[in-house]
Structures are given as structure tokens and as C-alpha cells.
Length: 445
Image: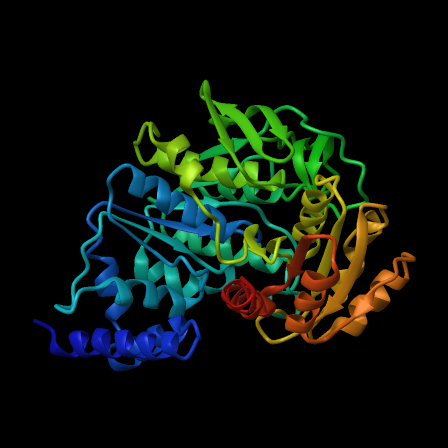
């Protein structure tokens, strides 16, 4: 019995309990305390997972994909450790293990599903030694923290090579992610959508326009969105890999549905990007050896929560909360909002705290002009950088109301809005906005 490890776990649990009582997440704090008391705690607990460990990486969709994969494994009767809250740096990952451990200092788990921040994989991968890595996509994100995309790719390539037995489950439609998997030398399988689904008429930034192998401009047969699509390099022949899990008969609207391996999946979500999230989770489940017989049943019960297309109803107003933290993600959020033809109000809350990235120039790469539609009855800008957001909308001739206090903005739209509200927030605004909505649910019954 390792007394120091047990003390570390007890202290972490106590810290988590106190934080929850104070209305805070407390997850990263719990992980930090545990590692301070006993530095090897994460590595030792991770080694106790009986079967396999998944790491989920990528710019957008990590939290939803990771939680969905966890739910799919649990639907197969497996015990799973998961960092559900999206705390994906080393302290958040450590917290997932220590908070799941028993008071005896050990864990009881068949699988682990761990969302990992790309820049933090240097610390996370050596500790948890993942058997599988799910790669969702690679887009430009938080320039002041990550730098340009090549820096993120270099970090991921280094870490993939350091776990040579790890199988990569990659989005084959993303030229950047697919190149990483193909170039790494690790075994990989790919998922994607081999046929066009809908017209892509936006002016999105295409991050992967140039071949990572030879530098030539890629030729695309079609785009799904951003740089995702069917690509080929006319110079060196690099092209989208043969898809092991190919979604077809894709339908997107009030709900999404598609077929893969002759199975029909349907979910009550908006947003084309959620097809990729579901497909990634399914590919992960199948690669681990499960048939996925309960996958559809899981989808019907699965609630993304944590501000990922999370739904609330307050005083007759239907509210959808969603994270939007970079150009590619925000453009897909706008697409999802505009798939709803009914009158709607929109609140956009932008912060520039350290976790968000203090450089908010990315707002100018988002196609906000698509909100210039008669179904959008009002747009309220909020958060620390509300004035910057209002200026951005002014440049596309979209009027907006300014209310820096998010709670006041929400209360106003509940009272005077059209009863259909979309709230789009970046990272640090997410948890506080979700807390406000939870509070208002109880208060304004």
C-alpha cells in the first residue's frame, strides 16, 4: 500500500468537493494537488487500466467525440475513466484518474478515454501511454499560444512517433491530420465522408491548401468545410487515404443522420460537424474490436452537455449554448444556427483570458456576414471583448446590442426576445455562461 499516493488521492477528492460546493469546477486544482503530493500518481493510475487507453486530439470536436466514445464503451458494458469536463491539460487529465480512484488508491476501469490538448501531449502521452489516438482535425487556433499550425503538427508528430505501437484513428478528409498519420509510420485507420453533402459557398480560410509532403497546392474535387474534403496533390500524388469508415447518405437539418458499414445512425443534433464527431467515436469503438450494436441506442440518450450544443428551456425560451473558439469552429456554428429557419436571437460572448488566447484577430476570419438574414431578429455582443465583436459586426453592416454582462444579456433576451436563443461563446465564457443558464433554469421556472 502506497500511503503517499492514497493521501494524494484523498486530498484531490477533498479539493474537488470544496470547489463544487463553491460552484466551481475544481478539476484542474484537484489534479495539481495530487501531483504535488505524489508526482507519479498519473502514470501509476494510468497503468492500472485493464484494457486500452484512447487519447482524443484535434482542434475542434475533442470534448464531444471523447465523451461520445466513453458513452459508447459504457453502452458495451465497459467501465471507463474519462475527463468529461474537457479539462485536457496535464492537471485536468491527472484529475480524471485521481477523482475516479477508490479510497484505497487504485482504479477500477477497463478503458480510459482522455481528451488531450495538443500542446500538452508532451506531458500527457508519456504518462498514459495511449493505445489509440483519435485525430479529429487540425485548424488554426489560439495563435498566441499554439503559434501557426506547423508548430502543433510538429508536436503531434513527435509524440505519435514516441508511441510507435499506438494506432491512429484519423479524419481522412483533413489533409493535415491524414498527412500526420501517414507520415508517422504508426498503424492507422481513417474515417470520413467520401461524397459531397452540401454546397460549400462560404469564404472560409483553407488551412491545408498546400501539400505537407512537397509544398504544391492541393487540388480538391470538393470541400465539406474549411480544408476538409477530397484532395490530391498534382505533384507528389499525396491524396486522401482510402476510408475505412466511410459515411454516406448523410442528411443534415434539424437532426442529422448517415449510414456507415450498412448501419443507419441518427441523432437529434444540428451541425454538419457533428457527423464527424459521431463518426470518429464510432471508428474508435470499432477499432477497439466492438461491433457497435448499442451505438444507436447510445446516440438517442447522449447529451453533449458542457456547452456543446447544450439545450435549455427557460420561461418558454429555447436556448442552445455552444462553444465557438476559432474561425473553422465559428463558421460551423453559424451554419448550424442558420439551418434553423425560424426567428431567432443570438448572443456572442468573447473573452481574451489566457486560456482563450489574448489575440482575437481570428474574429476577422469568421464569415459573420451570414448572420445578415431576416431570421436573425437581434444580435447581442457580450464578454470582455464585446466592443471588438461589435466592431467586427459593424464592418459587415450588422447592427448589434452591447451588454458586457452575459447574465444581463441572457435575461434581456428571455424577457424580450422571440423565444429562440442561440448563445455562442469562446472558451472561458463557456463554464460561467453554463452556470448562469443552470441558475436561471431553477430561478425562472
